[in-house]
Length: 575
Image (cartoon, rainbow, N blue to C red; front, top):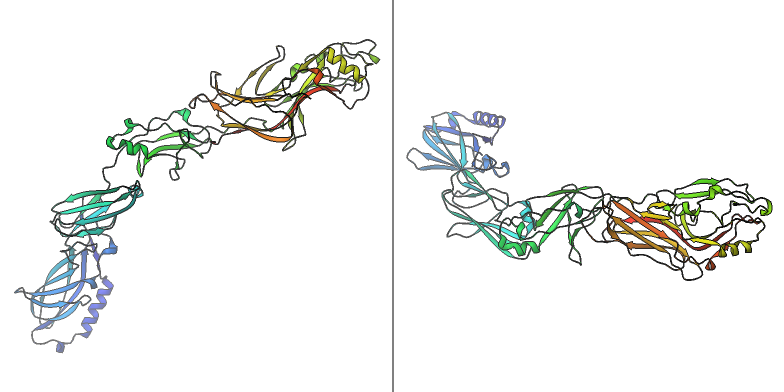
C-alpha cells in the first residue's frame, strides 16, 4: 500500500510540543481530555488494468482540506472540525473520527476521499491519533491519441448516467464517478472532412478505487500502401503508385472516401513529412526531396496511417563531368619549323568526344614541301589541312573557358609554298572536304568517321540546360543539340526535342526537357550531343586569316558555322 503523508514528522513534532506546552490541568473540565490529530494519510493507489497505479499528486488533497466528524459510541455526531482544525477537547470516552474530502455521490474531475479511525479519550490526557483516507469513487481515464486529434477539426468528451445530464471531461485526465453505476462516454465533433461524428463507450458496475482507461480511438479504417517500384524513385522526387480498394484492410465501404482523401508522405528523419501532390496529368508525386537520401514512405487518411511503410533511397543528382568546359588537353601530332610548317595538335575536351581525331587524321605525316614549295611536298603542317574542329575558347559565360565547335573545310592534295591566300581558298573550294563539328558524350571512331552515343550515368534528369552562341554560315544554317537517356541494355528511355538555332550573337541559356517512354526504368547511360550545323557547302564558308602572313599561311582556316557551348547542366527538380 502506498501513502502520501500530508503532514511531515517535523511538523507533527512542533504541533505536539505546542499542544503539550499549552495544556494545563485547569484547562480541562471534569472528565475531559484533549484529542490531537497528528496526520491524515491519503491512500493514492488504485486498481488499474492498463497503466499507472496511483493518482496524480496534483489532484490530491492536503490534510487541511479534510472535514473531520467526531461520532460518539451511540452513533451521534458530537462535533465537526472544520478544515484546518486538528485538535479539540472531548469528554472521556470512545469515539469514531470520520475524515471527508469531496462528494463521492457526484461525477467530477475532483476525487472524493473518506477515512475513519477509532480513538479513546482519557480524562486529563492528550490523545494523539491519525486517519487513513481512501478514494471513494471509481476512476475513468479517457485517452485520445494525438494522431487522432489531428484528424479532428473539433471534438468534445462527455460522460452521463442513463437519466442524467452529460458532463464534460478532459482528454488524458482522471475523472471520478460514483462506483457501481452505469455510464456512457461519448466522443463527438467534426472531422477534417467537415463531417459530424459521434462514438459511444458503455461501462457498467464500475468498481471502487479502480481506474478504467478508455482508449477513445473509434473504429477507423485501416489500409496498406501498395508496393512502390524502385523505378518510381528519382533524384529529387518520387512517383507514387496509388492505393486501390484492394489496399483497404477494413471498412471497405469507406473506400471511396478514404482513397479520395489519401495523402502520401516521405520523411528522411521521421519528424518532417513531405506530402504528395497531384499533377495536372493525374500523376501523384512527392517533390522537394534531396538526392542520395533515404526516405520512409507512408500513406495517410487524416491522421490514420497505413499499416506499412517503405524505405527508399533517391538517385544521385549526377552531373556531366566537365560540363563547364574548363578541362582540355591536347596531343602533339607534328612538329613544324614555325614558318612554312606549324606544330599540329589534336585537342581533347575531358569526358567529351569530338570529331577532332578525324579532322587531324594524317597530321603526323605532314612534311615540308621545301622552300617555295618547289618540291610540292606531301605536307606542310598547315591548319587549312589539319586542325581540331572543336577547341576551347575564352569567349565564355562563366569561369575561363567554353567549347567552340566549328564546321571546317580541309584541302586534300599537296601544298604549294608559293600560293597566295586566294589560291588557298580556291584550291580548297575545288578539292576540299568539309567536316561539321561535334561535341558529345560517347565515343568516336576516326577510321570510320562514326560515333556511338552514351556514357555511364545512373541518374534520370528532368531537363538539360546549356549556354550557347551561334554564328551560322551566310546562309541559314542551324546548329543541332539534343540529349538521350538509355537503360542497361542501351535502349533509349528518354530524349529531349532536337534543338536548332539560327544566329545568336550573345550567350543565351537553353533548356531542353526530357520525355520518358517509361517512368520506372532506371538509367544506365546518357548522351548529350552538339553539332555546329548541317551546311557543308564550301562556297558558303569563309577563310579566316591567321597571324602568320606568308605562304603557306599555315594558321589560316576555312570556316563555316561556329557554335559555342558552356555550362552544360542536368536538372533534377520536378518541373
